[in-house]
Length: 165
Image 1 (spheres, one colour):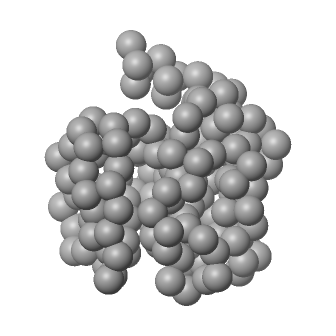
Image 2 (cartoon, rainbow, N blue to C red):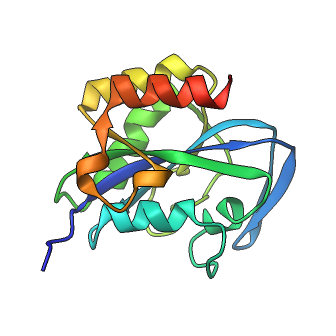
């Protein structure tokens, strides 16, 4: 039996049209662009990322409302392997230095964080964050196998070549 890999992740996705998203009692408007969602998975980060990559699923987390839309394309995730339970808050505080926070309260009902959803204005910021934390890039098509995660510099360079080619 394989042990689940614990950790935090930054899910990266594109939105190709403006939308209004409702989550809990709140709602916000999102413009087309590149976005990051911060999450954690203490029972298996690779399985969680694979779930986020699927379109068909039961809505459970706020992010499910976005990832199930046809207008959303989940590209993959930056993965930080750790057993620290507060990894979401750690990643959120760092993300505030790199990205633009959007949708107050999104995805963070179990923390005191302002949000777990961010707009990525500059792709270089995503690469810098990934390198600073020595994270791995896990593309959606390989989310079930830890061996398929790759160093940030390789994965993110290919990601942006494919996304914006």
